[in-house]
Every structure is written in C-alpha cells, then in structure tokens.
Image (cartoon, rainbow, N blue to C red; front, side, top):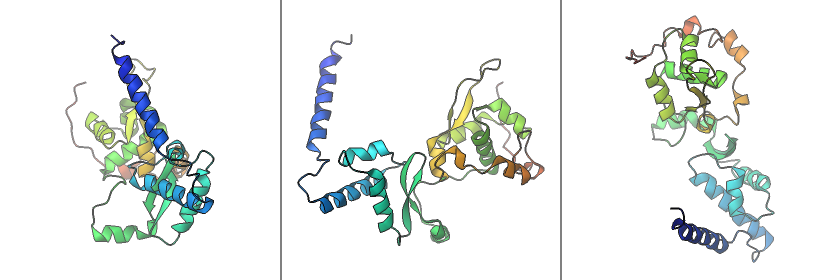
Length: 230
C-alpha cells in the first residue's frame, strides 16, 4: 500500500528542495552592509508575522549560514530602543512585545489586541498557577490542593486557551492523566522558562499558594457547580 505514495513523496521533496534553492539566503551579491540590513529586515518580518515566539532554527532559514542571529537581534533591539515596542526572548524564541509602560494607554484605548493572555476567572487563574508549580499533576491532586473539586470544564477551558497540555500518565492506581503547562503559557505571561516563576516560598508567605492547600484569602474564588460522571 505504501508503494503508490513513494512518487508523491519524491515530488514533494524535490519541490521543497527547489523552493529552498530559489530563496537566496546568502545574498552574496550584496555589499556586506546591505546584506546585513536585509537579514535584519527578514528576521524582524518573521518575528512580527509569527503568532508565537520564533526560535533560532526558524530564523536561520532566512539568513546566511554564517550569520549570527544574536548579533542581528542586538541590532534590531538597538533600532527599537525609542519605539513603544521591543523584541523579547520568551518561551524559547523571540517575539514583538509592547513595552510595559504603555499598558495603561492600551487598556484605556479599549482597542482589540492580539496575543497576550485571555481573561481567566480567579479560580482558573489559581488552578493554572498550581499546575505551573506542581506539574505534572492530576486533576485529583489539584482538587486536594484546593479543597474542592476541580472540574473537567475548568481543565478544558485552560486547555482550550492552550495553557495546558496532557503530561505523562500518573503511576497511581488507574493511571490518570497529568497536566503540564505549554510554551504558549510561557509566552502569554512573558516568561522564558518555568524558572522565571515567582519563588513559591514567597507566594506561601503571601498566603497565595500552598503545597498543602489554598490560603483563606482564596476561599472566595469559587468554581461553578458542575455535574461530574465519576
């Protein structure tokens, strides 16, 4: 059954190779200054157009093989120094972000914005925070932390926002699914890695989160009643 597909795969591979040959990455015909400038514009265009942070491997496809991505980014950042937006490194890649000092202006304008974190209920935000710190974690363990049921609807909402993904099966009886945060979670909240999360001891001291349960201040963050089928 696989044999008829082989010619199609070969044609696809040849088409891809031809496309890559047609795209001039090296720009050897340009003077060094113009070549560097074109590479800068290409990298900025890719970052600007991308829906998610752009990694080094992706950017390397549009510049010469000996081009330093880091130096290009440094030059782009220097050019944007006086602009209301910048290029930041989050979630393993680079992304355009509005500078934080303009956040109030953007909110006051009430203009629709792209990207960023969607609005979460207080309870959803707390569940997401618990997953971030204690992942991989099961829904049952989340319920123990909060002292109340964490419904499938809450998990589905966070998964629908692309903040959560399935982790490895838990080694506990029944092998329930665990949940982990995604790269989109890091991007939406402006973090490079999970190491950028606030220190959990500081959160415990502030009464926001505890390994053994949620603080009294969070008891008012209620989740709507849901009918569960076991």
